[in-house]
Length: 400
Ligand code: PLP
Image 1: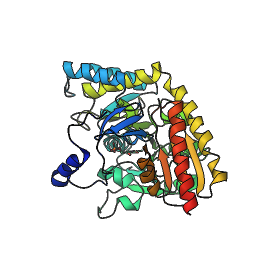
Image 2: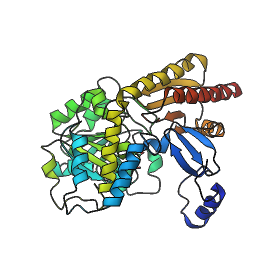
Image 3: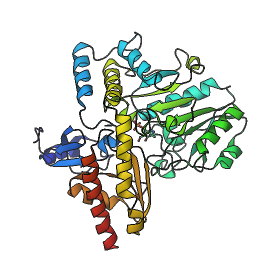
């Protein structure tokens, strides 16, 4: 059933005329969703194992979030941060009581990264400004965030970039140690690299970064825009690894698909973000905060941390045997609801083939098939999606 008032083609015509063409888009307009299923304007149904690029952590239109947003919108959509905002206090409590410290809210991942970098610089002496980040990391598209993103393809034509960022190879503690000098103020890393291909840190690597940060008085920032809010089977990614950062960022799924970002820092760091030093007009608005509280409630009441761990194992059971079966499958990396299948061939053609069969997935870093399923994906949906994807991988392997 379609709820669209226009055909996909009619919407595409509006885009051709009025929207800046900076995205490569599939020629489809999605118009309605429920859980892990989504329908286009023509009423075709897709099983989405990459819903909303990870933002729809509870699938499409999760009922508690819908209800919370409807109620909140009718009561109060926006008030600025010159007032105390009830829902902001509640969401901060929900997040920090499940992690630590104090929270700041904004609207997106890149904005969260900008704020975290500013806080790291503000918290350390003025002579310290350099931030070490990691090759194949991804932190967003604003200037500091894109500079922190150590992938030259995202820098082309933008120079000069921001001063003060240094890049180390992932999993190489010696390289990090060598980069640290008197001007270093922090280390920024995704606990699991997402866009870079679902790269899980080597055992001891994050612990090693914590030790280096402690030894040299650096601020350790985890970018949890993708790993936060249940994605790894723990509330926040750092808990999966048992390493506490000084600051961690959040966005994507944190408010169940409603635009929201933020960061959490240790209590002793919080005062460094003095009044007047940072702000976000829409940050922490009642609507997004109510959605965030409903997201936490849903994860908790539906036992989704445990459920998603079981579904992660189910995906792994489907995909791991492919390493022996199909020569084009180089590696299968699963950690919670982050799944990467690394191929010896480009992964992009697979996205199109799966879409034609009614399955939505993602390709990243040229050769990696990436899934970020909703935490409430069902066992039947895991089986349905895995079988479709495996069939297409077999066809691709046969074609050589
Ligand atoms: N950090 C990470 C780890 C991300 O995956 C992303 C987006 O994919 C960002 C930051 C940027 O988030 P946003 O697109 O909301 O600015």
